[in-house]
Length: 342
Picture 1 (cartoon, rainbow, N blue to C red):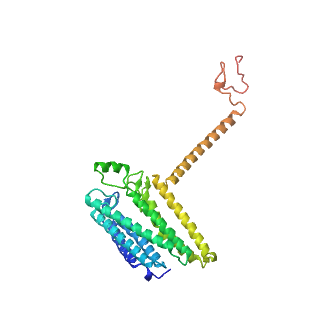
Picture 2: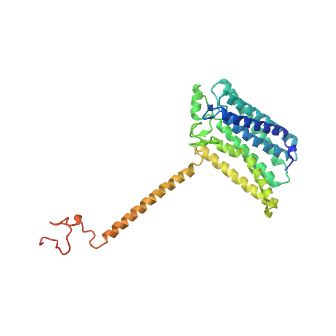
Picture 3: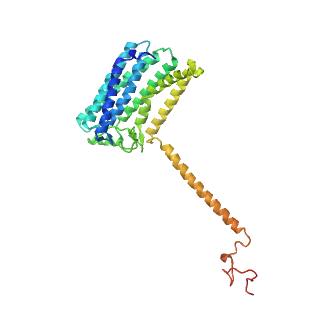
């Protein structure tokens, strides 16, 4: 791993500023009780700043490994840092005003803020695409690291595309736009309104689909897959097979494929309007219902077996309902005749 002094300086500066903003946002969460769209007003600046710290550090390290096109990579990383900083300034400013930053169409100013954010995201995505292209052209010494970074950037770009999908108006919002009454344009929920019941830490929807889950999974492939390489290298002194670069490469490709499958799964679930863990909860309910039905069936079988045993005893079945004549319904004593000649 290259020395941190060779890492991309603008991205390192941006990561440091985001770490400071995360602390400020955490204080805001503690002292400011305002709520916007069902979440604390400082929650979005907090989670975005933490996410950008990881994203910026990853890119700063990756760009230091480029053997060629370093100047082009430097400009690409600088564009990512500047556009990300502009986006975070807009998000934080809206939080300070007590207004939602994303999808806000309430006033001309709020709409202009969200439009500016959309422009920064498009430029950021294009700069990341440039860095991904450089990684595919570069010939890095360690192939496992090279493919971890390549797959990570491709998945990060795919996750970012879901952000563009969230900005599209829903059918209801299109109708409102036609009448000029749309205060919100875009949504992260699928099959459920934004701001409903959500997970305590992430704020993801629990009653319907949420594109933010796949967005998160895709973006942070840029940290997870290189970390797999780091882990394999760290374990190589203990496991001799991991010292072989070809073994590490195969494991990285397997990890990348698995991560891509998880990303595809959570994207599919979100687009179907299915909440995270919905299938698991349904299976648990089905299991409980099946257990109840099996218990009832066993109780019925036991009752039927007992009834059959009673019927098979001597004299069983000779009850009031089976007798006729003047002594019907009476139980004879021992030695007593039963019939008209008594």
